[in-house]
Image 1 (cartoon, rainbow, N blue to C red):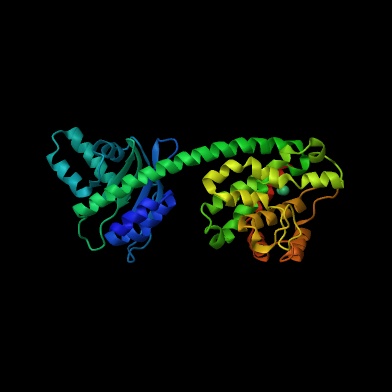
Image 2 (cartoon, rainbow, N blue to C red; image 1 turned 90 degrees about the vertical axis):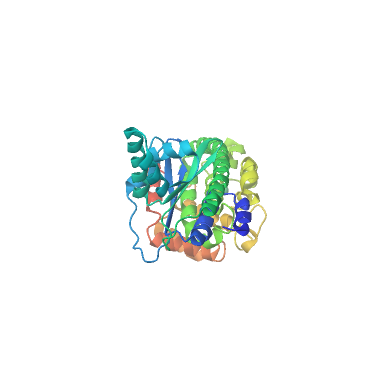
Length: 382
Ligand SMILES: [Fe+2]
Ligand SMILES: [Fe+2]
C-alpha cells in the first residue's frame, strides 16, 4: 500500500467501495492468494462473510463451507482479536502455543489456530470502531510464500481501522434511512388498503423495477446507490396519492377532467413526501419519483419531459408501472392478459416507453424472472 491507496481510502464512503479497493489494489499489491472480509451483523452476535476473493490463478475455486460464512462473537478467534486488538498471525499463535503456561491457554490458542486454518487465514486484521469489532480482513498466504512484513501488517491495521469507521457510519445511515422509509411504507400500505385496485401495486412495481435495474446495471450502477434509489423510488412512487381527496382515490368510475387534473399532482406530492431521502441519496431519487409519469415522447405529466431528460430510474419505473396497471383490474376495465400486455408494451416501445427499458423487461419476462412477482399478485388478490 502506498500514498495513493491511503488517499483513495480516505475518500471511500461505502463498504462496497472498501471491499473493491481491497480486491483490486490491496490484495494484489500484497500478493495474497485469497482474502476474506467479515463484518459485524446487525444483531452484533456474529460476523458475517461479505467478500471471499480467491486470487490464486492455479487454485481451483472451492465452495465455501457454510460453517465458515459466519463467526459467533464467542468464537475463540473473535475473543482473541478482542483481547489483543491487533493483527493476529498464524506464526505468532504457534509461538504463543509453545510458551503457553497453562493447558487451558494452550487449548484456547489451538482453537484460534484451527479456526484460522479452517478459514484459510494466515493473518487476521481486526478493525475496531469505539471498541466495537466491526470488520475483520483475513489474508491467506502470499503466493510467493514470503511472510507478511511488519510494514504491511501496520498498513493493513490502518486500513481496517478506517474501514471500521466507514462501515459503522454507513450502518448508522442505513438504519436512519430504513426508519424513514418504513414510516412512509406505512402510509403507502394504508393508501393501498383503501383502494382494492392498487393493492400490492407498489411492491410489484418495486420488484419489476429491481429486476429490470439488474438487467440495466451498467447504467443504474453509475448512479451512487443506484439500485437502492431505484427500489425506494419504485416502492414509494405513488405515496403522494395520500394527499388527494379520498373521493378521487376510491372513485369506482373514470375520473372527470377536474379530478384528473388533481390526480396528475400525485408525482409531485410523492416527491415532497420522500424529500428527506435527498440528503442521503441526492436529487436522483426525488426525480425518479417526480418523473414516473413522464413519457419518452414527451406526452406524459407533470412536465412533459422527453427521452433521456428524465433519469434511467424514472424510465424503469415508468415501464414497471405501466405493466402493473395493465395486469390489474381498473374501475373502468378488466385486467389484460399477459399476452395483451406484452403486445401493448411492444407497441409503445420507443414511443411512450424507453425502448431499452422495454427490452430489458421483455428479456426478464422471457427468462421467467417475474414469476415470484406474479405469485405475490395472486396472493394479494389484486
Ligand atoms: Fe403514479
Ligand atoms: Fe403507480
